[in-house]
Length: 122
Image (cartoon, rainbow, N blue to C red; front, top):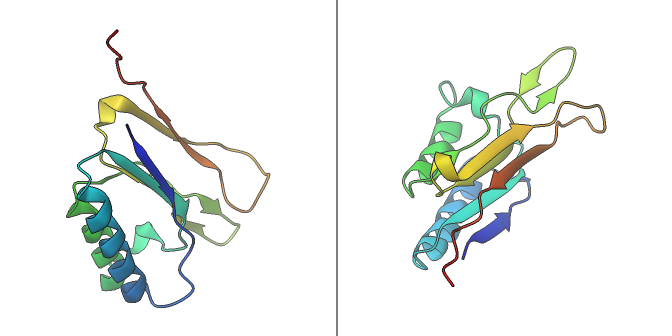
């Protein structure tokens, strides 16, 4: 069993959004099942070393043993590159294959994660 969730972008303060994420993570982690959360978050992870609120957002996931699977920019314009589309999971890296599709369908590059099926005993 695996829990999936999609989160929409914060339209307010990053700190308030992080507090909500912590509540969600706490509720999910209580179930003791692996989970993956993804979304167009609009928090630029490339700023985690310079903006404390972004670092706190990332640390919230780390505190629940989540791995960030996307580490390259997902929105590229002539004047900037940002990492604002996120996938976090508690699955081990040998169970997932994340990626970014390079195309011009949108101003964001699509992100994905392939999850290896669990072995089922008969």
